[in-house]
Image 1 (spheres, rainbow, N blue to C red):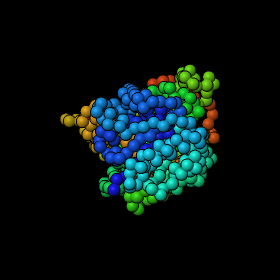
Image 2 (tube, rainbow, N blue to C red):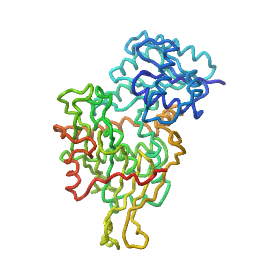
Image 3 (tube, helix red, strand yellow):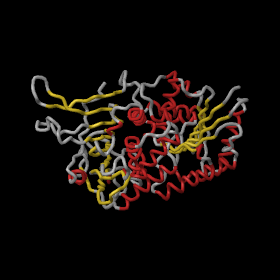
Length: 483
């Protein structure tokens, strides 16, 4: 019995869709993982002929894109385009949904089996209410003939109350089993690999606790600015953009207890426990803004938006009680790097601590970008001397060529998970709301951001935040995983 599957993308001409979703669909087409009878229906407001729409998709794939550097094959593009259609209309106009329903009914008639659908919202949150209500009115959320799922992008809300409002709104129209809240960091191969590294082995996990860990550092730095995103970014800022979601997830994966089973419910339960245990200190938070930010396109001249933040927190649980967590992120910094560093204590009786570098700590590093991998930093002696030097035990992904996409793009992985019905690496409503409660506390303490120099590691106040505890920010290394 044949089956159809339709992915409906609301906002297919958006920056998000062009940079990530369309690229991911290409990768999936090239790898042959898309369902055989899959159709993609794109929506945007402007009218486009079929030729114009397909030219738009070709242009989106051929644009320079830092996230997808491998070559695009013409034959794969054309194969993908055969799946793709366009239904123009305003998402707040009920007439559009009549047109959409008629189009989807035509697709459904080609199948005598199930008619599965996913609605992907690559659009503004102020349209959600209209979208959900009109989908329901037209019978487009009915699951009689196949599953209906909703994929929705981060950031979900701008604080706890707005996030709760969106979650409550979705719950009015969809079951929780239908809702797939996207945070593309949850689709990153290295982040997911942390669970295997920790709980699939017995070597390091016994050391990941307050008895052996001195502190934890999480860095998410970019050496570029906001680009053309001024309209979005100036209303959001760095902490709301990546702190509430990406870095909270990084911390959860690195510190959560072993789940009772590898299931969505069990893994999510442990992530939520970590977020509930994370306690902020409103005195230990720094906000910064890079020089020249106010002159960026679509940024208000008197903007107080943060493009950098650093804060100290602590996990109030048995495993990590008393272990400080230092988190920083920002734009126009010295290096683009995202990593979690578990810094181990230096034993009092370490034999070579009197030598130069003898007091350097061992560090377990989960590197999410660039040169992704899992690395242990340790000390060795130089040949023919008793001088110490740093070296690395490392697991690195095999990258065959510069343009390889051996490591699946997060959007590719998450779209495929949604098709399969696997919610393990999607965010739960409680998870998102708990993270917002933590971030709201930090934002309440926000003062005018401190200006910092482009190409630096942020304002000096961020260095002082960690130095007052007798520690320093680690300098991200380029010495490992350069395969």
